Length: 270
Ligand SMILES: NC(=O)c1ccc[n+]([C@@H]2O[C@H](COP(=O)([O-])OP(=O)(O)OC[C@H]3O[C@@H](n4cnc5c(N)ncnc54)[C@H](OP(=O)(O)O)[C@@H]3O)[C@@H](O)[C@H]2O)c1
Image (cartoon, rainbow, N blue to C red; front, side):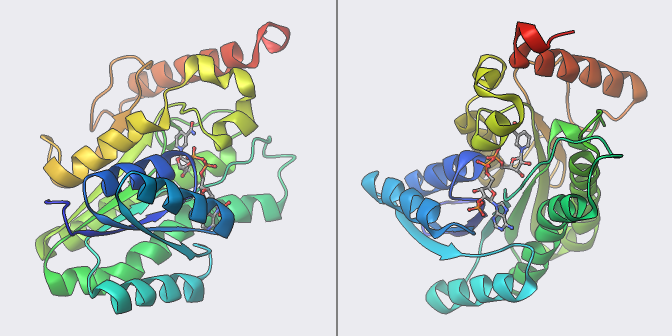
Protein backbone atom coordinates (compact mmCIF):
# COMPACT_ATOMS: atom_id res chain seq x y z
CA UNK A 1 0.00 0.00 0.00
CA UNK A 2 1.20 3.50 -0.81
CA UNK A 3 1.55 5.44 2.45
CA UNK A 4 1.57 8.99 1.08
CA UNK A 5 -1.90 10.37 1.81
CA UNK A 6 -3.14 7.17 3.48
CA UNK A 7 -5.10 7.56 6.73
CA UNK A 8 -4.00 5.44 9.68
CA UNK A 9 -5.36 4.96 13.19
CA UNK A 10 -2.86 3.69 15.76
CA UNK A 11 -4.34 2.70 19.11
CA UNK A 12 -1.86 2.90 21.97
CA UNK A 13 -0.19 5.52 19.76
CA UNK A 14 0.88 7.63 22.73
CA UNK A 15 3.74 5.37 23.76
CA UNK A 16 5.95 2.37 23.05
CA UNK A 17 5.33 0.26 19.97
CA UNK A 18 2.24 2.29 19.00
CA UNK A 19 4.11 5.58 19.11
CA UNK A 20 7.10 4.22 17.18
CA UNK A 21 4.68 2.91 14.54
CA UNK A 22 2.80 6.21 14.38
CA UNK A 23 6.08 8.10 13.91
CA UNK A 24 7.23 5.82 11.13
CA UNK A 25 3.89 5.92 9.31
CA UNK A 26 3.91 9.73 9.53
CA UNK A 27 7.53 9.87 8.35
CA UNK A 28 6.36 7.96 5.25
CA UNK A 29 3.70 10.65 4.72
CA UNK A 30 0.58 8.94 6.05
CA UNK A 31 -1.94 10.96 8.08
CA UNK A 32 -1.80 9.39 11.51
CA UNK A 33 -4.46 9.46 14.21
CA UNK A 34 -3.08 8.39 17.58
CA UNK A 35 -5.64 7.02 20.04
CA UNK A 36 -5.27 6.19 23.71
CA UNK A 37 -6.63 7.26 27.08
CA UNK A 38 -4.02 9.78 28.14
CA UNK A 39 -4.34 12.95 26.07
CA UNK A 40 -0.95 14.17 27.36
CA UNK A 41 0.87 11.19 25.83
CA UNK A 42 -1.09 11.54 22.58
CA UNK A 43 -0.26 15.25 22.31
CA UNK A 44 3.42 14.46 22.89
CA UNK A 45 3.30 11.91 20.08
CA UNK A 46 1.72 14.49 17.76
CA UNK A 47 4.40 17.06 18.64
CA UNK A 48 7.06 14.45 17.76
CA UNK A 49 5.29 13.59 14.50
CA UNK A 50 5.04 17.24 13.51
CA UNK A 51 8.64 17.99 14.53
CA UNK A 52 9.64 15.45 11.86
CA UNK A 53 7.46 17.03 9.22
CA UNK A 54 4.56 14.57 9.52
CA UNK A 55 0.84 15.02 10.14
CA UNK A 56 -0.72 13.67 13.32
CA UNK A 57 -3.94 14.06 15.24
CA UNK A 58 -4.61 13.04 18.85
CA UNK A 59 -8.02 11.57 19.64
CA UNK A 60 -8.43 10.37 23.24
CA UNK A 61 -10.14 6.98 23.16
CA UNK A 62 -10.76 4.03 25.45
CA UNK A 63 -10.66 0.91 23.29
CA UNK A 64 -12.73 -1.02 25.86
CA UNK A 65 -15.69 1.28 25.28
CA UNK A 66 -17.64 0.85 22.04
CA UNK A 67 -19.11 4.39 22.20
CA UNK A 68 -15.61 5.85 22.57
CA UNK A 69 -14.34 3.76 19.64
CA UNK A 70 -17.32 4.82 17.50
CA UNK A 71 -16.57 8.47 18.29
CA UNK A 72 -12.96 7.92 17.18
CA UNK A 73 -13.94 6.34 13.87
CA UNK A 74 -16.68 8.89 13.14
CA UNK A 75 -14.27 11.76 13.86
CA UNK A 76 -11.65 10.29 11.49
CA UNK A 77 -14.23 9.69 8.75
CA UNK A 78 -15.64 13.22 9.19
CA UNK A 79 -12.15 14.68 8.80
CA UNK A 80 -10.67 12.46 6.06
CA UNK A 81 -13.55 10.46 4.57
CA UNK A 82 -11.49 7.26 4.65
CA UNK A 83 -9.53 4.90 6.88
CA UNK A 84 -6.84 2.82 5.18
CA UNK A 85 -4.84 1.39 8.07
CA UNK A 86 -5.55 0.39 11.66
CA UNK A 87 -2.80 -0.71 14.01
CA UNK A 88 -4.30 -2.13 17.20
CA UNK A 89 -1.42 -1.67 19.64
CA UNK A 90 -3.27 -0.60 22.83
CA UNK A 91 -2.52 -3.12 25.53
CA UNK A 92 -2.00 -3.73 29.24
CA UNK A 93 -0.49 -6.56 31.25
CA UNK A 94 -0.82 -7.87 34.79
CA UNK A 95 1.79 -10.31 36.09
CA UNK A 96 0.07 -12.46 38.70
CA UNK A 97 -0.64 -16.11 39.30
CA UNK A 98 -4.17 -17.19 38.40
CA UNK A 99 -4.97 -17.88 42.05
CA UNK A 100 -4.07 -14.30 43.02
CA UNK A 101 -5.51 -12.50 40.00
CA UNK A 102 -8.75 -10.64 40.68
CA UNK A 103 -11.71 -10.74 38.33
CA UNK A 104 -11.22 -7.00 37.74
CA UNK A 105 -7.59 -7.53 36.71
CA UNK A 106 -8.59 -10.34 34.35
CA UNK A 107 -11.33 -8.18 32.85
CA UNK A 108 -9.06 -5.17 32.37
CA UNK A 109 -6.45 -7.23 30.48
CA UNK A 110 -8.89 -9.17 28.32
CA UNK A 111 -11.14 -6.17 27.63
CA UNK A 112 -8.23 -3.97 26.56
CA UNK A 113 -6.14 -6.48 24.65
CA UNK A 114 -8.84 -8.61 23.02
CA UNK A 115 -12.20 -6.83 23.14
CA UNK A 116 -10.38 -3.60 22.20
CA UNK A 117 -9.10 -5.21 19.01
CA UNK A 118 -12.60 -6.51 18.24
CA UNK A 119 -14.26 -3.12 18.82
CA UNK A 120 -11.72 -1.11 16.80
CA UNK A 121 -11.70 -3.59 13.92
CA UNK A 122 -15.50 -3.90 13.84
CA UNK A 123 -15.83 -0.12 13.79
CA UNK A 124 -13.60 0.34 10.71
CA UNK A 125 -14.68 -2.71 8.73
CA UNK A 126 -17.76 -1.14 7.08
CA UNK A 127 -15.74 1.70 5.57
CA UNK A 128 -12.88 -0.62 4.55
CA UNK A 129 -15.28 -3.13 2.98
CA UNK A 130 -17.03 -0.32 1.08
CA UNK A 131 -13.65 0.92 -0.17
CA UNK A 132 -12.52 -2.61 -1.08
CA UNK A 133 -9.18 -2.12 0.66
CA UNK A 134 -7.57 -1.73 4.07
CA UNK A 135 -4.93 -3.16 6.36
CA UNK A 136 -5.55 -4.14 9.98
CA UNK A 137 -2.55 -5.04 12.12
CA UNK A 138 -3.22 -6.50 15.55
CA UNK A 139 -0.35 -6.50 18.03
CA UNK A 140 -0.33 -9.85 19.82
CA UNK A 141 2.86 -11.16 21.47
CA UNK A 142 5.15 -14.18 21.60
CA UNK A 143 3.04 -14.83 24.70
CA UNK A 144 0.15 -15.26 22.30
CA UNK A 145 1.87 -18.41 21.09
CA UNK A 146 3.30 -19.87 24.29
CA UNK A 147 1.68 -19.62 27.73
CA UNK A 148 3.95 -18.96 30.72
CA UNK A 149 3.33 -18.80 34.47
CA UNK A 150 1.93 -15.56 35.95
CA UNK A 151 0.70 -14.23 32.62
CA UNK A 152 -2.58 -16.15 32.35
CA UNK A 153 -4.83 -13.24 31.41
CA UNK A 154 -2.22 -11.69 29.14
CA UNK A 155 -1.48 -14.97 27.34
CA UNK A 156 -5.21 -15.73 26.99
CA UNK A 157 -5.83 -12.29 25.50
CA UNK A 158 -2.88 -12.51 23.10
CA UNK A 159 -3.74 -16.08 21.96
CA UNK A 160 -7.22 -14.64 21.41
CA UNK A 161 -5.86 -11.82 19.25
CA UNK A 162 -4.27 -14.38 16.92
CA UNK A 163 -7.51 -16.37 16.66
CA UNK A 164 -9.51 -13.21 16.09
CA UNK A 165 -7.09 -12.08 13.40
CA UNK A 166 -7.33 -15.43 11.61
CA UNK A 167 -11.13 -15.27 11.75
CA UNK A 168 -11.04 -11.68 10.48
CA UNK A 169 -8.80 -12.75 7.62
CA UNK A 170 -11.19 -15.53 6.66
CA UNK A 171 -14.11 -13.08 6.66
CA UNK A 172 -12.47 -10.04 5.10
CA UNK A 173 -9.76 -11.21 2.71
CA UNK A 174 -12.20 -11.43 -0.20
CA UNK A 175 -13.22 -7.81 0.46
CA UNK A 176 -9.64 -6.68 -0.18
CA UNK A 177 -8.67 -6.27 3.46
CA UNK A 178 -5.31 -7.57 4.68
CA UNK A 179 -5.01 -8.56 8.34
CA UNK A 180 -1.92 -9.49 10.32
CA UNK A 181 -1.19 -10.51 13.89
CA UNK A 182 2.25 -9.30 14.91
CA UNK A 183 3.91 -11.08 17.84
CA UNK A 184 6.77 -9.05 19.31
CA UNK A 185 9.23 -10.57 21.74
CA UNK A 186 10.43 -8.48 24.70
CA UNK A 187 10.44 -4.83 23.61
CA UNK A 188 11.84 -1.94 25.61
CA UNK A 189 8.69 0.04 26.47
CA UNK A 190 6.88 1.29 29.58
CA UNK A 191 4.82 -1.91 29.70
CA UNK A 192 7.91 -4.13 29.63
CA UNK A 193 9.77 -1.95 32.16
CA UNK A 194 6.79 -2.17 34.54
CA UNK A 195 6.84 -5.95 34.35
CA UNK A 196 10.55 -6.68 34.28
CA UNK A 197 12.26 -3.55 35.65
CA UNK A 198 14.86 -1.23 34.19
CA UNK A 199 17.19 -4.12 33.38
CA UNK A 200 14.71 -5.13 30.72
CA UNK A 201 16.77 -3.04 28.28
CA UNK A 202 19.46 -5.71 28.23
CA UNK A 203 17.35 -8.37 26.63
CA UNK A 204 14.79 -6.44 24.68
CA UNK A 205 14.60 -4.76 21.32
CA UNK A 206 13.68 -1.13 20.70
CA UNK A 207 10.04 -0.48 19.75
CA UNK A 208 11.26 0.97 16.45
CA UNK A 209 12.22 -2.57 15.37
CA UNK A 210 8.61 -3.74 15.77
CA UNK A 211 7.38 -0.56 14.09
CA UNK A 212 9.58 -1.24 11.04
CA UNK A 213 8.05 -4.70 10.69
CA UNK A 214 4.50 -3.38 11.10
CA UNK A 215 5.02 -0.65 8.52
CA UNK A 216 6.73 -3.16 6.22
CA UNK A 217 3.61 -5.34 6.40
CA UNK A 218 1.42 -2.36 5.55
CA UNK A 219 3.49 -1.34 2.53
CA UNK A 220 4.73 -4.66 1.17
CA UNK A 221 2.69 -7.37 2.89
CA UNK A 222 4.34 -10.66 3.76
CA UNK A 223 5.84 -13.30 1.45
CA UNK A 224 3.81 -15.85 3.45
CA UNK A 225 0.52 -14.33 2.39
CA UNK A 226 -1.88 -11.48 2.88
CA UNK A 227 -3.16 -12.59 6.29
CA UNK A 228 -0.60 -14.20 8.58
CA UNK A 229 0.91 -14.20 12.04
CA UNK A 230 4.38 -12.69 12.13
CA UNK A 231 6.86 -13.08 14.97
CA UNK A 232 9.19 -10.11 15.55
CA UNK A 233 11.88 -11.20 17.94
CA UNK A 234 15.60 -10.79 17.58
CA UNK A 235 16.67 -13.04 20.41
CA UNK A 236 14.36 -15.98 20.10
CA UNK A 237 15.35 -19.23 18.45
CA UNK A 238 14.65 -19.31 14.72
CA UNK A 239 10.92 -18.90 14.30
CA UNK A 240 8.81 -18.24 11.31
CA UNK A 241 5.18 -17.77 10.44
CA UNK A 242 2.79 -20.60 10.97
CA UNK A 243 4.99 -22.66 13.31
CA UNK A 244 2.64 -23.78 16.03
CA UNK A 245 4.05 -27.18 16.96
CA UNK A 246 4.68 -28.28 20.54
CA UNK A 247 8.50 -28.30 20.28
CA UNK A 248 8.43 -24.71 18.95
CA UNK A 249 6.29 -23.64 21.88
CA UNK A 250 8.59 -25.39 24.37
CA UNK A 251 11.63 -23.65 22.89
CA UNK A 252 9.93 -20.25 23.09
CA UNK A 253 8.84 -20.91 26.67
CA UNK A 254 12.35 -21.90 27.76
CA UNK A 255 13.80 -18.87 26.01
CA UNK A 256 11.22 -16.48 27.54
CA UNK A 257 11.71 -17.75 31.07
CA UNK A 258 15.50 -17.42 30.68
CA UNK A 259 15.10 -13.88 29.31
CA UNK A 260 12.78 -12.83 32.17
CA UNK A 261 15.17 -14.30 34.80
CA UNK A 262 18.13 -12.60 33.16
CA UNK A 263 16.35 -9.24 32.96
CA UNK A 264 15.32 -9.38 36.64
CA UNK A 265 18.98 -9.54 37.65
CA UNK A 266 21.10 -11.91 39.77
CA UNK A 267 19.15 -11.54 43.06
CA UNK A 268 15.91 -12.77 41.55
CA UNK A 269 17.43 -15.44 39.30
CA UNK A 270 16.93 -18.96 40.46
N1 LIG B 1 6.77 -4.41 25.35
C1 LIG B 1 6.79 -5.70 25.10
O1 LIG B 1 7.71 -6.44 25.48
C2 LIG B 1 5.68 -6.31 24.28
C3 LIG B 1 5.87 -7.60 23.75
C4 LIG B 1 4.85 -8.17 23.01
C5 LIG B 1 3.66 -7.48 22.79
N2 LIG B 1 3.50 -6.23 23.31
C6 LIG B 1 2.24 -5.54 23.04
O2 LIG B 1 2.52 -4.35 22.37
C7 LIG B 1 1.44 -3.44 22.54
C8 LIG B 1 1.98 -2.08 22.92
O3 LIG B 1 2.56 -2.15 24.21
P1 LIG B 1 3.92 -1.39 24.57
O4 LIG B 1 4.91 -2.43 24.95
O5 LIG B 1 4.23 -0.42 23.52
O6 LIG B 1 3.52 -0.70 25.96
P2 LIG B 1 3.05 0.79 26.31
O7 LIG B 1 4.11 1.75 25.97
O8 LIG B 1 2.59 0.71 27.73
O9 LIG B 1 1.84 1.03 25.33
C9 LIG B 1 0.54 0.58 25.59
C10 LIG B 1 -0.41 1.65 25.09
O10 LIG B 1 -1.75 1.17 25.19
C11 LIG B 1 -2.56 2.26 25.61
N3 LIG B 1 -3.75 1.76 26.27
C12 LIG B 1 -3.83 0.96 27.36
N4 LIG B 1 -5.11 0.76 27.68
C13 LIG B 1 -5.86 1.43 26.77
C14 LIG B 1 -7.26 1.60 26.57
N5 LIG B 1 -8.17 1.03 27.37
N6 LIG B 1 -7.67 2.35 25.53
C15 LIG B 1 -6.77 2.94 24.69
N7 LIG B 1 -5.44 2.81 24.82
C16 LIG B 1 -5.00 2.07 25.87
C17 LIG B 1 -1.67 3.05 26.57
O11 LIG B 1 -2.07 4.42 26.66
P3 LIG B 1 -3.04 4.95 27.83
O12 LIG B 1 -2.64 4.27 29.09
O13 LIG B 1 -2.81 6.43 27.82
O14 LIG B 1 -4.41 4.59 27.39
C18 LIG B 1 -0.31 2.95 25.90
O15 LIG B 1 -0.11 4.02 25.01
C19 LIG B 1 0.54 -4.05 23.61
O16 LIG B 1 -0.56 -4.65 23.00
C20 LIG B 1 1.44 -5.11 24.25
O17 LIG B 1 0.70 -6.16 24.81
C21 LIG B 1 4.48 -5.62 24.05
